[in-house]
Length: 166
Image 1 (cartoon, one colour):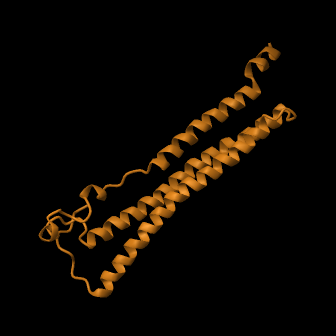
Image 2 (spheres, rainbow, N blue to C red; image 1 turned 180 degrees about the vertical axis):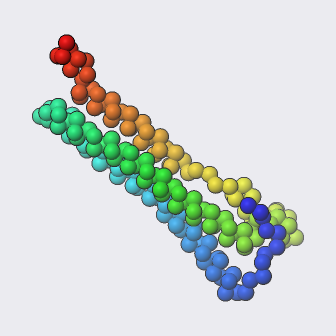
Image 3 (cartoon, rainbow, N blue to C red; image 1 turned 90 degrees about the horizontal axis):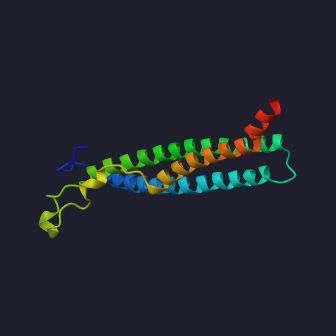
């Protein structure tokens, strides 16, 4: 993105609109970050309930396997949900960066005369970075998917099926 060194000529109405939109983009970005955490905690918690049901002593093996498929599907759903919320977060951050650029927040020369400290915002903030929560939940869902597959295989116990056939 090209850093603007001169603010485009804006009237008070346009300037106020850009400031308001920038604030709203910040709020939506915070909202999506919180949604990543809250939605994934809900998905993982619900998956653990099904995991407990699958390993109940009174549950037959066939039913346990069917129950274990539910958390596996929920883990895949969690991956897609996290990706979708991250995309929405990126859209908000991109919009916010664009609006901050229109407000000359990255222009180092503009504020040098005032306090000699450079731009209001450092230029590295114009680059998108993935929040730690997104990376954490994506890795967690991949790991849990493998764990659920392993549990399904343990419940089916392919070696005992193989020994019964031969």
